[in-house]
Length: 274
Length: 274
Image 1 (cartoon, chains in turn red, cyan):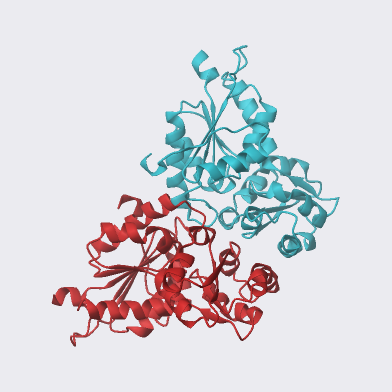
Image 2 (cartoon, chains in turn red, purple):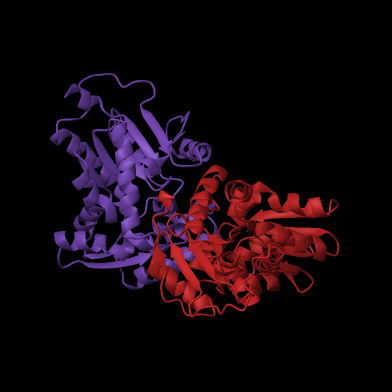
C-alpha cells in the first residue's frame, strides 16, 4: 500500500495542451509525483476517428502503466470523449478524464441552463458534453461548436493577435446569439485564449476550464481510494517526469515556459510499440 | 517486364494534399494505374521531427510495395525533404519526390535568381529547396518562409476567406519586400490557395507548383526505365485505388471533390504494422 501511495500520477495528452491540466494538478496536489506523456508525434487527435483515438490512448496508458502510475488522468478532451470507457475497461487502476468534471461544474454553475461548449471537431462530434450535462440537468440547453483553428493559432504564437480575435469572434458569434450564460473551454489549448474569449463573451458569461475541476476530482479520488501521498514521505527533488513521442526538445522548451518548475529533460518513447 | 509495365504507381502523402499530385499524374499520364496512400491518422507531418517522418514514410513505402507498385512518388514536400534518401536506400524500385522537380523549374524559370519558398515548418527547416536550387544555380538567392496556418485554413474550408487573406498577406510580406521573382508553393495544400497568393504577389511573380513538374519527371522516369504502360494493354475500368490510415469516408468525400474521377472506396490500413 505504501508503494501505491508514493506511486506517481499518470497524465497524458495528444501533445502539449495537457500541460495546463498537469499545472493545475501541481497547484492543487503539490505532494504528488507526475509522469506526463504528450503524443507529439501523432498530435492532433481532434481530427481523427474514435477508433484511432482509442487505439492511441490505450498504447499510452500501457506505457504509463510501465512507469508504475497509480491512476491515469486523460488530460485531453478528445481522448476523454472517445477513449475513457475503453481505458477504464482495460486498466486495473482508476482512469479519469477532463470532460465529466467540466460538464459537472457547468451544469451546477449555469444560472439559466444555457450552456455552450467549444472544442475540437472530434470532441464536438461526440456530443459527450451535452450528454453528461443533460444527464445531470435534463432541462439544460447545450450548444456545441468546433473551433479547429484555435489550436494552430495558439501554436503559431498568435494568442493575442488581431487575426485570432477575428477568428474567435466568428466562432463565438452563435454562442452570443444563443445567449449562453456558461461556456466550457472544451480543449486544453483554449484556456490559453481565455482572456480573449472572456472579452468577446462579456462579463456575464461564466467560463469553465475543466482542468481545475479535474484536479479537484483527482484529489478526491486519491483520498477515497486511500492512495494519496500524504504519509509524510518527502517528495524528492524532481518529482515530475516528461515523455513524448517526438520533438522532445521543442516540448521541453514549451513545457518550461508554462509550468512553474524547471523541466530538465523530456524523453522520447516509441509509443507504437506499446 | 510486362508485369512491371502494367504495375501501378505508388503515390503517398501525409493526408489529402498529395491528391493534387495524383491529379496531375492522372492528367499527364492517363494510361497509368495509381495506388494512393494518405496517412490521415498521423497527419500533419510538417510539425514532426525528421526521424519520425522517415519512420512513417518507410512504413508507407513498405505497404505500397505489397500492392505491387513499380515506382513510388512521395507527394508530400515534408516527406520528400526528410525521407527521400532513406526510401531510395531501402526500396528496390525507383522513388521520386516533389522537391527536386519544383526546385529545378524554379532555378530554370527565375529571371533574376530571386526565389521564394513557402512550406511547412519542417520543410522550411530542412532548407532542402535552397540546397537543390543553389546546386543548380549557385548565385541564386533563396528566401524560405514557413506558413503553418495555411493547411488548417484550407482544411477549415476558408480558401477564399478574408481571414485567410490577412494571414497570407502577413506570411508573404517578407517575400514581397525581398522582391522575389519566383515563388515555390512548397506544400501540396498551397496550390489550393494559388489565386489568392497570385493576387498578393502580383502578376510579375511566377508561381511554381511542383506537382506538375513531378508528373513530368515521373513520365520521363517510366520511359527511361522502360516500365511505362504503353503496350496497348487496356487500362481497366477503375485504375485508381485509395488507402488511408484513418477516416476513410471523410477522405473519400474530399478526394471525390477534387479528382476528375468518381472515388467509390478508400480502404483503411493499419499502417503501423508495416
